[in-house]
Image (cartoon, rainbow, N blue to C red; front, side):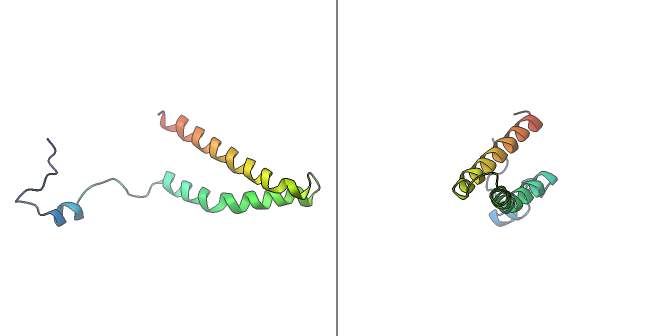
Length: 86
């Protein structure tokens, strides 16, 4: 049975305040946040850069952006799967 049941010796507030839940920031969490913050503006810039350089017409900018976003998410999930072994 779990020892984290409400008992007389520890009130509920104290159990929550001093709980060791392991949600401290890690290098992986910082990398994930950085990816989230920088990926969308970078992909928009890359999609428009391809249009500006004449690689494709303007109507293709949104599909290129979507492809970059989906591709990067696939790479990120594959990398996480390989590194964690789950």
